[in-house]
Image 1 (cartoon, rainbow, N blue to C red):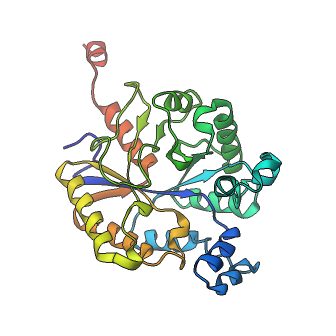
Image 2 (tube, rainbow, N blue to C red):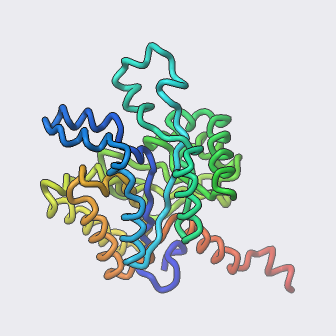
Length: 304
């Protein structure tokens, strides 16, 4: 049995959510034009917010007896932090517009509630922080001050990563794991079937095997999307592996048909196949506990 699979489970499925845009703002204008559907403008009303799906996610996972990780972002603001010359740049809008503030009372309350009820809260490092350790450390400190305790790990925004320097930065500021390696265009076990230790110490990397947007659109081709998920689950089981998946909270909204149903079926099938399911931080705890029980040559000599 793999050192990474707890108890008598066949494999492990780690569930994660990157909290990028919990508020639907300029996207309402985009979809109105792209789909020629003015009803998207209704989502700009203050009492409507289809991207705030956290209650739905928690309810779904709780009904299946599982927990997940939510990684929270402290991104730069297009109008506050970027130059005026970027305000008309399409790429800058994609990267920096419509973000949120950790100082938002609703965000702070959400993080506290998730943490209190057994979900993991982690760090979603901003777009440039993977190569800016001082920036990443400030984001970690703000997140921990808002949450009221230390976080164990997280994932870099847009999966940005420089190997191994980003991991060195993360480790130096007290993070214990990273879940950044992966792709938004492809899925699969590109970095092997198990988490790995780039420095052969306590710091662990959980490769992201599947991001939802890499799948065929389940709203148009559900069976193809599900077939891909099922193949990955069977592959993880056959190799006693760890399969880490990323489902953004907005994909549980009505703007993204089929993704909620696909996520539920993914978890249900994993349970049927005998998987341990939970957030990476909890699996890390299992691994650390198992390591502590394995005697080392030094500890064996000390008892003689």
